[in-house]
Image (cartoon, rainbow, N blue to C red; front, side):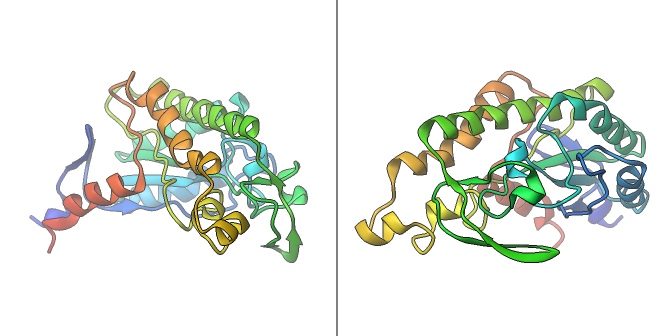
Length: 250
């Protein structure tokens, strides 16, 4: 039997096979971000195709972080019923479901997210969504970082609730691939070309660099350590897990 179609694990979660779908923008939600029949139909086509783990597209933990129109929503409790429906359909089809929590940072606009964009630095960002416009986000204070961190925790709990309500079997309700130089929110912190202070001083701003740990550690502390069914994965860990996951294919 081809090992590609054999079960495997990511942490404690058992995946029916080694075919994994990464998060990709679909614009299948409604304008508010609610799951629609189009959303369900899109992912169920992948389930029927045999995908073992469906990683649902990026969803922002707060409204200010939505970086695409019709982006899937998870920033308020109103979205839980739709997410529950989506996860339930994926489970009934025999696949597992995960979701990417991501923040657009300065790579969004008021006409897209409906709020003032925020980012580690108030530097210009070209944003293309139908039209190309350059915006200047609001620089985050320590208090604003704390708020975003709390919103990540709340979003992770919503993802967990949507998963656990439907099925008590082990699942992967939350993936948080944040520690990534290409991530919209963290790039200005990690990249000296994006961070004026780093260019001037030759060092990282310790206050803002804390975003790295805050956005990942707090959800992990509040959810991952208290619920054995919840798996929160950082990129390096996910890379190692996936490497082992597919290594036997070579």
